[in-house]
Every structure is written in C-alpha cells, then in structure tokens.
Length: 511
Image (tube, rainbow, N blue to C red):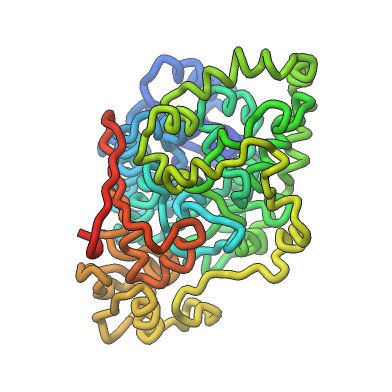
C-alpha cells in the first residue's frame, strides 16, 4: 500500500504517520516536507526510524511539480497540510496560499495522475462558523457560514469547493472537530487567540491520535474490501458525547492542569460574545460506525496532559496577579486581542465579535453575572442530544442519498431563496444548474449543495463577508445566522492583508 501524505510535521500528521506505519499491511509512505532548516532534523529522524518505508520529498505544497512528485504512483493521498490559527489570522495571504492554493495544487496533481489515487482532504469544523446554544448541534449539510475576518474558515471552505468541483474519481472530505494534542496548553498560552473563544459556544473535540486511528482504519478496511459507499462523500470527525464541551468548560479543563479555574485568571469581558467557530456533531457516529476509532474523551485527555506535564501544576503556587503581569497582560495587548480592539475602537471587529458598541456595554464585568450554559438545568441532557433542535436542509434528507432526485434539489434550492434550473439529475456528482437569490447562475452537483452544504460561489466564499444581507433572502442561512445576529443588522465586512478591517452599512441588499 503506497500512501502520500502532507502535513506530517504537525500534531495530526505525526500521529497519522505513526498509526499508518503500524498497520499490518506493509504500508509505505511518501511525505512532503518544506525545504526549511527545521525540517532537516525531522527528515533525518524519519529515515532513521522507518528506513525505506518512508520516502521524504522536499518541496512546497503550493507548487504543481512538487505535488506531482509526491503523488506519483500512490494509491492514496492524505492531505493534512495547512496554516492554522493564529498564523492564519496574522497572515491571511499565507492562509490563502497554503489552505486554498495548496489544496488546489494537490487536487490537480491527483487528477493528473494515471491511475488516480484516492484523495482524502482534512477540512475543519470551522467552515460551519459561529453557533450558540439555540442550535448547538450540527451535521453535514448544514449552512457553511465562515465568521467575518476568520481567514482560516474562509480558505478551508474554498478548498472544499475546489475538491468538489475537481471531477476526482475517488475522494472524501473530512471535517475535523477541535483537536486535542499534547502541546495544547503551551500553544494556547502564546497568542491572544485564546481570547477568541465564546464562553457559551458549543465545542466538540477529538484527539489527534483518534483521528490518526481513523485514517489507519480507513486504509486497513479499504485494503480488505470491507467498506462500501464511503468515498465521494463528506463527513464530520468528532468524539461524540465524550468530546462535547463549551468554551468555558475548555478554559476550566485547561487551567485545572495548573491547579486553577478561569475565574482565578480571567475577566469575563475579555471574551467576545459571537463570531467564533464550534458546534457539537449530531452525526459523529457516522464514521464511528464504519471505523471504530473514538477512544479519547476531552476531560480524560486534559487529565493526561496534566500527568505528562507535572511541572504545570506548579502554576497553582503563583499568584494570579503575577500571571497576569507576565503573561496575560502581554497577550491582551496583542493585535489579535478582543480587549485591544475595544480599547482602540476597532469598529469593524467590535461589530463582528460583540454586535457593536452596545454589545460591549453589556459585557459582564464579574463572573457571578455570567449566565454560563454549562451550569443551566438540563445542560447534560442537551449535551446528550435530548430534545436538541437540528437545522433544516430544505428537503427530505432522511432518505438515503442514493434516492435523492431532482425534486429534492429543487426543494433545497427554494429553501436557499433560489432555484434549481436543471430538470434532470443523473447522479449525485453530475453538475446541475442553479440560481441564487442574488441572481447569480452557477453549476454544482447535488453532492456539493445538498450533502456538503455549499451554495453560490459568487456570494458564499466571502471577501467581503455579507451574510447579514444574504440571510434576508435565504431561509437556509437565516435559521442559524439570526441565533447570534439581529435581523436589522446590514453590515458588510472586508479585510485586506496588512490593512485595517473595515465594514459598512448597506441598504437594499447585497451589492
């Protein structure tokens, strides 16, 4: 079995390489490493540890010829490489070049290969955008609403669409939940990104090693001919009920490692009230039923971090005032800090993350004034999915995908404020003609629209972000957008790399 991989220098990639090479089927892996000095030692270690079973290709994922060298002769391509937050926040242009451009280059290389290898693309929960406890559960097919100014979300979304439109013979898109890995605590202490979390956001987690086991089980079962109907589809990767948390829960678990609680270190008005990304997956069991990989729970994983990093526990002896002075004060002053946006009057981000100046005025200053979702009656039942509302997709999605027809496509389009212009649908992957509520005509398959949740490429991969305006004519978007936005909001947000964010009031709909 010959497998090509990108992203093996990351937390997921390291685990994936280890799990795949432990398979009893004699897998050989070709990996792509950028020609940077920091990867020289990694390349040496890989050759020393795995010998000829690992071939190292030095190159850039955005270069066509490097991608072609990587995938040549492979049976499978596992594309994990990406620029994640906070790096994607600091350099949106780098995020676009790697997260979108690199994925496009990989897909092109796969399509040009003869025979074509199967392509596995790792996307993210981030493409769903912000969720609240009004609709904490999401599933494949839900609206894809990347939050304003969140470059990573936008570029992952565009990369998905490229793959769906690429006419690949055999592919799958896997949307990864928030990832648990051993370096979580120290990584989160380095950047103001930690203050982007919304305290009452639903968050689902999955560990890097469980995700790696999923990949290994896909390859193993595929080699044995044991799976049918898996490919040419989109799935969510999560840990299920044991992986469900809130933003506040995550802070609590993290700071328990150093013997404290969020209330000891933070003020609640340091955190925004919307524009995050996270939800609980109601369909996390789809992949689990096929590949049986879920082992780690989020709370147990944090305890494992505490056991493996005993020095962290010394933090409980440090007065909170010192931790603030030498750590949080610096983070709060960084350009990505919501507190700095408020201090400097960044009207665009204040609107996006707080709902404007009025939202800032309503921020609680004391923890006792915070209505934490995780402490409300019935929260545990909600987390189990009891009585949790799901979003509508505008057609009878309870039918098996193989039974979806042109009537379902027309119904889904109507729910999006548009229409399906085609009169026949030969397959889920055949291109159909559509028109959105803004009058744009485009082509996309039923798989792209009905299953994956994508819509108009002219409106929905925003720069600028204009979901305030689109939601007014798109009930599919409106059912979740107005959980965290007022119906009277009519803002268009834009961001150019290296320049301040801007927004404007717009009357009369999207321009």
